[in-house]
Image (tube, rainbow, N blue to C red; front, side, top):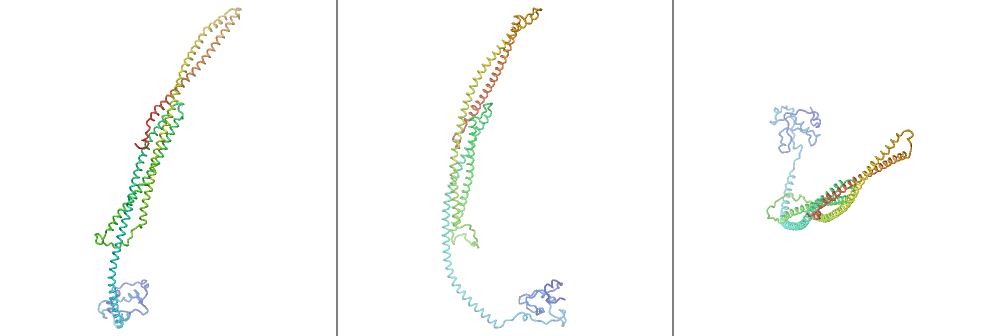
Length: 490
């Protein structure tokens, strides 16, 4: 059997089965001190607080609630323990002096409490009156501060309204100028297309007329000028769009600030007119501990002032940009008109030069045709002359051939024989010289025919160039936009 009072760890190390009936926990109530159950004191070596394992080890006898008897407990007289009082063992009793001193102390405390209560009542009356006056004064000051706050809000509201009207007017003006610039930019597409079509048509020139002349240079310059104007206009439009975004952002901040101030003014005006007898007042516990403020009067005024300054800055930038846009429309219109006139002058000069060259080509062609006719007549004369030399040559050669049939010594190399031989040689030489002249004449005729072909081709080229420059290009350039359209007014 385990010893009573063994350590708690020993109990955990060697657990025992729980008894069927066990003692309840000791209570601190007065009823728990009644000697209803036998009590076995702890050894003197243990001190408070008691160890739970020790208590439960001692209570393992399993007592019952029946009357204490030897038969009910199942104990013999030799096994009964002597009863020891719990009060005399653990606690000390009070003495009569302690009881008397306690009563006197209670009486003195009661008298002191009554005196303090009387002083408190007098102080409370004075404090109630003071607090009433202080409350009334504080409420008056709060009402005055609310009135001043409403006036401040009204001032900043008027400033915001004025700046908002100015910003709306500037935004509308910038929008109108932007639309004008967009219309002017759209009008530049037609002149650019005309210039490009002129260059495309002039690529259809033929031969030597496909020259990089002054007209083509001026057309390229016109395309560059129009593109430059378009780029500047587009860049200005992009800046205008960005500026409109900034204007609307500043306007939005003004409107938002104005709406907040209107709401704050309604709330503060309502608070300013609240009285102790007003409807709708009530308790809101802990509201004074809730600090939802995010600004102080200085930062509050600075915020609105910054919004107004930002709006003024954006408005000044918008006005400057608007002036630049109006100047740009005028400058670009003048530049395009000037280059348009330069191209037209170049076209006029080139058309005059081409027409003059065409006239000269026609004159040369006429002379060449006349010369071809003369050469052809000359060739026919040479051919006739060659044909005319045929019969005399035949006669001379026939005589020589006949004289070869003379007999014997009659084959004499006489004067007639020599003359016939010379005649044949002379006629042969004449025919050869005439044939050479015929070849020369035919070569000359070929040269003239080639020259005629070149002149005819050149004449066709000049006619094509005149048609392109005079009919197609100058016909399209009659539709150049007016100044009002280039300025974006139409």
